[in-house]
Length: 181
Image (cartoon, rainbow, N blue to C red; front, top):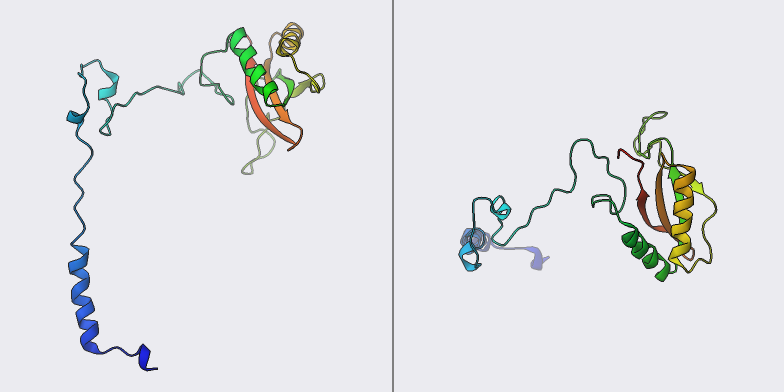
């Protein structure tokens, strides 16, 4: 019990020491000086719009009007055939199973039948054939993409990569958008 008792003189000493210790912290001096970074700023330089002391490059990733965004890579311009081929080769190198899906109804997530949080319609697309189990060549996937485009020219088409060991979808990206999108 003696260890839990403190004299009133010790309490007074602690209270007096606390403000002195708090004032020992160095005050905030601001962000880094831009003079440490070489370079010339012009009035048309976009890096002058925002600064945290270093060089900042700003890029708009979501145009707010007339551009719906989808999943992975949708903030980039439409992928060319060689770029699509590289993405498919990547998922094949990871031993993921490629699969194509399409959506005729617009490809967008929306709410129609239920209003609870986390529920959205339009999340599930129609599968184009079965997943391509055992596929090792990106050209096969691109041929299936071309067939799907011929069959459904007004549909959104995406390529998905499934990991059959973990039983999860690992990659999904839009491979084709109908004209006008």
